[in-house]
Each structure stands twice: as structure tokens, then as C-alpha cells.
Image 1 (tube, helix red, strand yellow):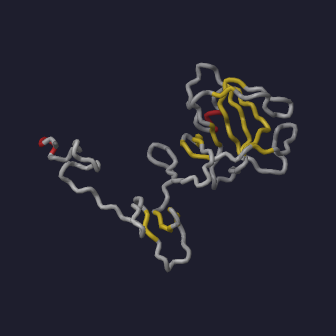
Image 2 (cartoon, rainbow, N blue to C red):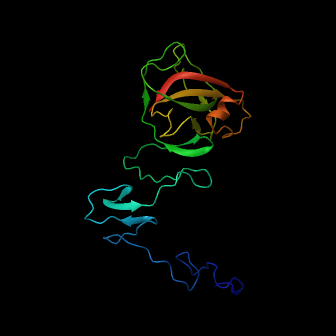
Image 3 (cartoon, rainbow, N blue to C red):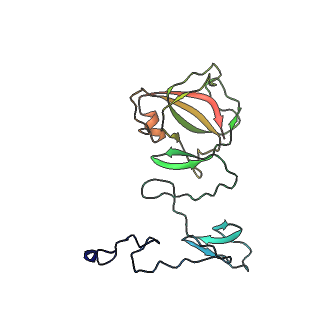
Length: 203
């Protein structure tokens, strides 16, 4: 039962809906077929043929509130239903966590300095204990990754240097390195650790 000292507002064993005992749960807005409507969405009238900011849930169109880029804890405020069951990863960008989906490795043309020729590429940093590259900048075997460390992006969509093609740079750290100490391109480049540019590119 509720504690009288708290004014009866604490959840109890009886509050199966996650509200205080004796209180009514908030009424959910539902769609035409009775499904609960997530907060922040309003149904789009069938008379509207198109519009800005629509999202589609289970075949129905809704208007969403203005998207907030990042939560207060520096996590990207993203909603993604992943309809094609793609792989998704967490990545650092400028000290914030963003989400990315990898579509596979590509073969591009590079000059002798491992600068891409004919395609714009963005820079991705992978923190490793060890890595071996051949004279063409390709991996020999697999890099030895730091467990729990997220990769680092130099940009996100909307920035001039952004590209969906990511050229890998390997940041070689000692065994005592604490995962996710490096959280931005600046961190990687100013860390004092060896940074090895490759010709490995992923989309």
C-alpha cells in the first residue's frame, strides 16, 4: 500500500500500470485500429496528400514534433524501426554518440599518400591494440580491437566534410588504455598515439 508520509504518490505492489495505487493511468491516444499512439505523434488527416515531418507507423502517417538532435546525455535522439534488419552500431562524433549502419566495404582509388582519387570520403577512426597493413594500405589479417570502444567519426550529415564513404584510420593504443577515452577526431589526433591511415573504405 502507499506510504501516508509520501501523500500516497509512491508506486506500490498494486500499481500494475506503473502509477500510484488508487490513481488512474493516463489515457493513451489510439490509432484507427486501436493501437496506442506513441507520445509526440499526431495522426495525419486522410485528406492530406503530402507534408513535412511525417513518419509512418505500421502503414499509417503521423506528424511528429520537431526532432531534437541530441539528448542531454549526449546520445543521438534517434528513432529507427530498421525495416530491413540491418546491422547498427554506436559511433562517437565530437563527444556525442550517434548511430550508423554499415553497408559493406568498397574498393576505391588512392594515390601514394592514401588520399582518395575521384571520390569524397569522410574519416573514421578505429581504436586498436595492433594492426598490420600492406603497401597498398589494406589490412593483413584483422586489427586487434579494443573491447567496448566505439569507432569515431569526423562528421555527420549536413557537414561539408561528410560523406557516406568512410576511410579508416587506425589509432594504436597501449594495453592500459581505457575504452572510450577517445571520443572525437580531435581526441584521436591530439592523443599522441600513432594514427595509421589506410585505404580501407566502408559505406
